[in-house]
Amino acid sequence: MAKTYEQINAKIKAGEAVVVTAEEMVKIVATKGAEQAAVEVDVVTTGTFAPMCSSGAFINFGQMTPTIKASRVWFNKVQAYAGLAAVDAFIGATEPAEDDPLNKVYPGEFKYGGGHVLEDLLLGKKVFLEAKAYGTDCYAAKKMKKEVTLDDLPHVLLCNPRNGYQNYNCAVNLSDKTVYTYMGMLKPKCQNANYCSAGELSPLLNDPHYRTIGIGTRIFLGGGIGYVTWHGTQHNPNVPRTKGGVPRKPAGTIMVQGDLKQMSAKWLRGLSILGYGSSMAVGLGIPIPILDAEMAAFTGVADKDIFTQVVDYGYDYTNGISRTYGEVSYAQLKSGSIEVNGKQVQTAPLSSVVKAREIAETLKEWIEKGNFLLNPPAQLLPDAEREK
Amino acid sequence: MYTRIYILRFPKDTSEQPFIYQLVKQYDIESNILKADILPHREGMMILGLKGSKSNVKAGLEYLQGFGVRVERLAAGIRRDDEKCFQCGACTGICPSGALALHRPDMAVIFDPDKCTGCSQCVTICPVRAMEVSLGQNWALTDGGMSA
View 1 (cartoon, one colour):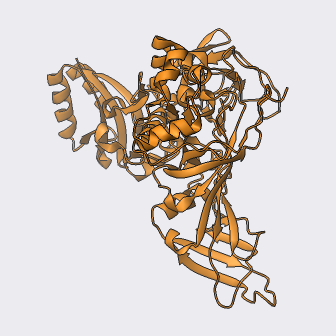
View 2 (tube, rainbow over the protein chains, first blue to last red):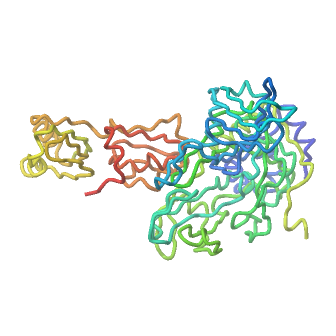
View 3 (cartoon, rainbow over the protein chains, first blue to last red):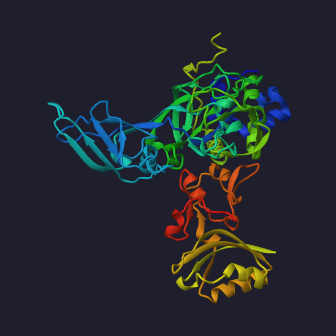
């Protein structure tokens, strides 16, 4: 028995929809089977909270008198890209403050960057805005300096070109010196392994062929409401998959947008990644409508059914060598150790399961209260099988 | 058996004293030097793990205090800001003593200050700087730490 978005939304409005988190769905599908789960469950909520470097915001900072066409812009000394209209700029999460020593003192601490600016704005803090311009007949001013809060800024649009990676590498370092990477500090000779996915709670791993997640999908974004607006950069559905359709290596991605003003500093956090740079942790949650038994089976996926590849960040990654040192499941990764080259290696996550769960629970509450409806996608994300 | 980690601050004029020898010999305490910074005629600091009967450890510490050594539980100088920590778990991969560890199956990141040896590696590894180590200014700047 198939359900439609209209039927599910009618149940949500009536306060009758059955909503469960992706973790809860694992048990439901395992005990009752996908057919029965599809009858009983209407929506499965997912979540993830982890560093997502390809994030940032368009900030329109309003005019002054005389008017200005800003060509270079800084927020708390973090440069934003200003090659747009007069008072528009884009601030990226990984842009460091201009006076940051970077990796000159190795490994650099990267204490403040674009992600921290967005977090400070959400905390209601004053941020120092500085703009420079060359001056035109219509925009005469050559500089602007002022303190601004989020309330002072006319428009701030969070716009993340690549979030929510469907699966990610498990990183090790086979070289003989410590490396500091976006996957954390990796000790030499494969002494530790870091991974970064919410596993069975992760949005795209619960809809492996993007049957319901597409352009226009309404989502939890940074504590507020946002939308999937395109497939993300590097979206690559054409990867090896398990029988259940789950990618065995990094695959799909999404581009997401939302009004920053209704988001929260709890779910957008500036990060300082030792030796790598600044970044931002983004809270993302996607509701998945259980249209039929296939969607129930997809969302019933468990950590033991999701696999990824062990990749060397000591030499291979930097040198563009695509090579795997084995395949491990998220159940193994979460157990605390995996086997690489016949040796037990301690694992550590970079993605917060606790916060991913909290996002899935929050989204579940929103839907149960009837104030979050599911938006059918205007267009689905590219999928290798659908295009055949 | 009683096992605790202490931070000791030595007055300038005590650098000649064979404290560790006395702790072992007179008080039957297993001493594990986790970190030490002692120079002649300068204030010294040491992070020391002590293992012995509770009464011996107490007596040993009193012996040190008799020389003006200031004794503080290391756990008192290490703190996690639970508001900042978002429980990613990055620290659990580098913590050598298991003071920062994952609780399974819910994957919450647990901090047990009693197990902490003060190595401070978590301070800069934490992406939101949630770990606070207040062991004195110069102390916090030294890297890694040595393990006995």
